[in-house]
Length: 480
Ligand SMILES: NC(=O)c1ccc[n+]([C@@H]2O[C@H](COP(=O)([O-])OP(=O)(O)OC[C@H]3O[C@@H](n4cnc5c(N)ncnc54)[C@H](O)[C@@H]3O)[C@@H](O)[C@H]2O)c1
Image (cartoon, rainbow, N blue to C red; front, side, top):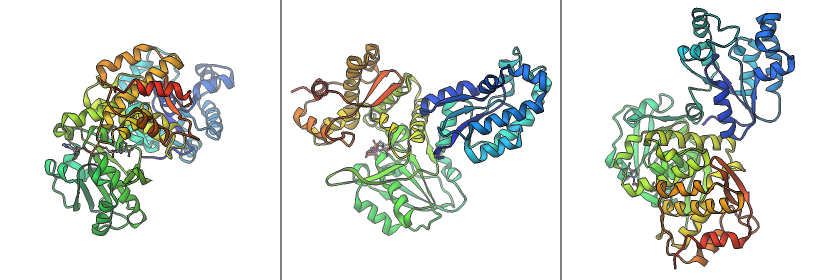
């Protein structure tokens, strides 16, 4: 993942490529303000762009544009900024972009751009032949500046996440591992049987690890630390679900104080839409799950939806709960898309949230929608009762019901879950579930802080409600 840090995210691209629309969407997904440099310029100079062009000519206009962008990129609050199509023609602006921004190129075909602007009053869209020439001249400039390229927000976010989603991509894994040095593969032993890696001179060694939660143990890490033949430049690929990528990603973070990079190749839906994205790695201790770990951003994530064809239905359902959660957070019924598009949209959304909060200091909490209740139910079932996916399906119901009652969420949102994610109340000890919820990492000073929805796509986090209300919501998920 390309760390945005406090840099501005700047969208460049040809006129008519859709920069403003994509920038608005990215601003919403990243929780950053949106700034349109053309609109700011018109406001500050008190005239429309065609008027300014006509009165002063292009060189003067570009200088004014540069001065404005220079100032914009010096503002402290990181924003999503859409630039005018010709702004990158100014050398000073190019330098500012390199120093102060992460750059996304909205890359649309020349024909679509022309269709969108032909009828406008844009000064550089007067005739089609000149338009095409200008497009051909500018395109390499855009490409040279871009950290990520693509048509829409999903493509761009996947680009920033260094996430490659392609049916059949596992079959050319060696080409997708960054660099040219040999790499090693750590793999869930059961998945390795089903999906042996493609032959390659680059593949130096394969290290099978146990399937399931057993992989997330000190013992498995110890044997990898002992056996790995790798140096600090080695890339470590990991094939498997969230357990394999959590454990091996942690080994990649810790062996030799960090290998050259790691490449999760998630083989479960949970892994493809969630666990392999965002750089959280870790293992379990006897006293609790995920208690030891590290943030370790992957050098690339290779997602091959074809790997899911061997995944048992029960495991697919586990991932579906995360897809539905993500749809509620994004504000679109992602669960109705075909599987590859679900994966793309969810991976892009998780990337956006992680980019906006890489160290989980605040906004990343929205990913816990429904999870506080889920953790309580799982713990009360001794982790052999409801599965994580079943518990999340129920937890989402409780969070949405509280959102309806307390924040005025449209009840229709909860009604959609009936077909998207059916779930029945479970039989666990309600007091034990309540006690486990109070221990949840998100509880501060004993007060639960919940993620709720104001509307589809409008999550709020850190919501404190009276314990009686939360307890009643929990009880509604449990049958005695
Ligand atoms: N790091 C994160 O941000 C993050 C996020 C969510 C979950 N997680 C972690 O992920 C773990 C759960 O991951 P999971 O649900 O992927 O479970 P998993 O890794 O245990 O995989 C589930 C089962 O499916 C099998 N399997 C995997 N791919 C297969 C395939 N293609 N065909 C057939 N069988 C296959 C595995 O061998 C295993 O038995 C938990 O430990 C959780 O804490 C981490």
